[in-house]
Image (cartoon, rainbow, N blue to C red; front, side):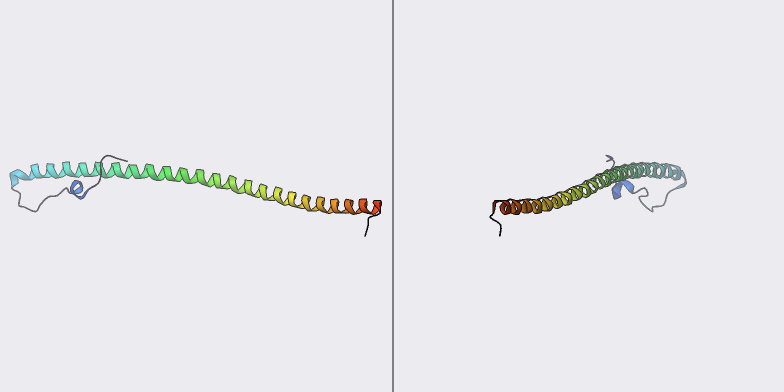
Length: 111
């Protein structure tokens, strides 16, 4: 962030409505121009800092979106694998129960 902070006092370039004599008009105009230039420099520095901050935030947002996309893809793959494991477990449990009944029948313990 710029060291040049915007304040009302720094942005004030016209300080009064007093009458200015002909011989002082050039001096007052120069003073006004210098104050206006300084105010413009401060404003430009602050605007440039804001632009940099917005660009950094946009870059961070793009990175976060990319990370979230990767997490969503991993989560989808994880869910598929979990569903596959659950199905395998059910199929294996059924096969074990059938084998257990077959063994019991072979041993003569069948119901």
